[in-house]
Image (cartoon, rainbow, N blue to C red; front, side):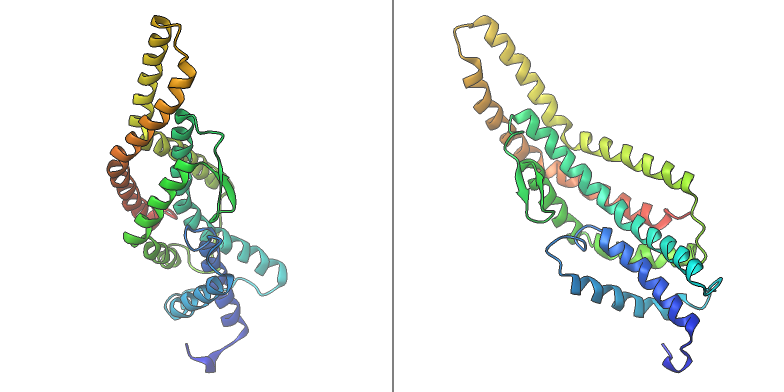
Length: 257
């Protein structure tokens, strides 16, 4: 950046790029976790903006410099960055939802714990799947792809030229929400299917041997079978999540089109 040519327009365009980058960082997985200091988030936003601004500011034209216009443009820039981080976060929402399904089938729905990362209650199996997803997220360099996706967004939607369509955004969010439920069911379908068969088998046993206290037998059996199934299907779950992250990379590159 040539500091000798700084002007009001240049500073405002820099702020708009910083706002778009900040929107991605405060909504993206890993970057937005409670364990990441706010100072680090601010530093990363500034560093990324300093690197990208000379590359994408040439084609940017600020429509006006009055307060209301700038506020409206800044809000749209923030939403653009927010969408990329939110899209990646949907995968983690699907993972936690999948863990909730398994936890209910195992009879551990009451054993919720406070997740130190999100500071919210989550199921034990959901935390396990979340940790696996975070490790895959980092090992596959999906956090790098988030930054690349924000950079590519300046090619599709230049600075200060956003014209967001609320109807289209609502349709996209609805479609994304449906994909979350589909992915969560796909990840744990084998476990849920086998445990449903176990439930039917225990119902037959209770009819054949009514003197057996089926509730005392079923609960530890469900927990044991559930843990074995989680261990057996964890490699397949990891593979499915890896494929999902790879597809997510492609979607992030074309989401604005």
